[in-house]
Length: 79
Image (cartoon, rainbow, N blue to C red; front, side):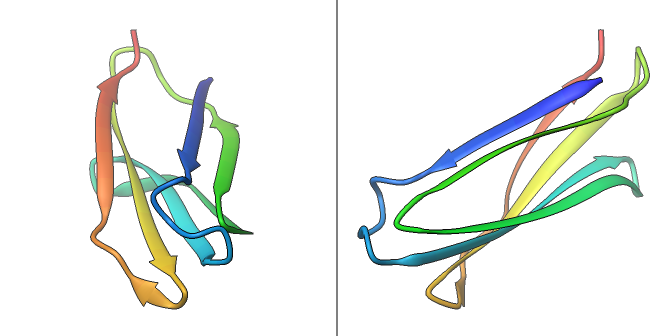
């Protein structure tokens, strides 16, 4: 099982509307997809089942007040 936690805040104003689509990938196969939103900040935590030895990528697409921001991602291998 792999846990994903994100925090987005302080960079944006307290009244900004933040929404995010968080996805976990193994190559081109999507393993999990979550959505979350908040005002002023966003805290996210969830988990998904993964396999030892495989490499996964977590991508995050964020909108601030409805305006898309560049996608961020991180990659890791399950040990």
